[in-house]
Image (cartoon, rainbow, N blue to C red; front, side):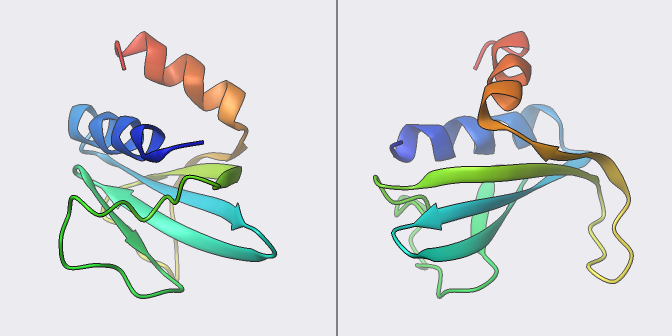
Length: 99
């Protein structure tokens, strides 16, 4: 996986601003959750660089699952559109949007 996948997910949320993607990733032995909304990504568990050109998706990232959540995102009461999407399933949605 590389940062272009992060860019594709960001572009998805630009085209679908009514959605937030909550992406569970694995980096080596660690897991992280990343929120992607309106073209920006932010780690919910680690520091995120101030520079938006620095991807929060390192090259060795493995996507574990993606949740599509209706915006605005309320962590105490998320409104799920779809949960536990695999990368293969998400790629279909990305390709439908030309990403």
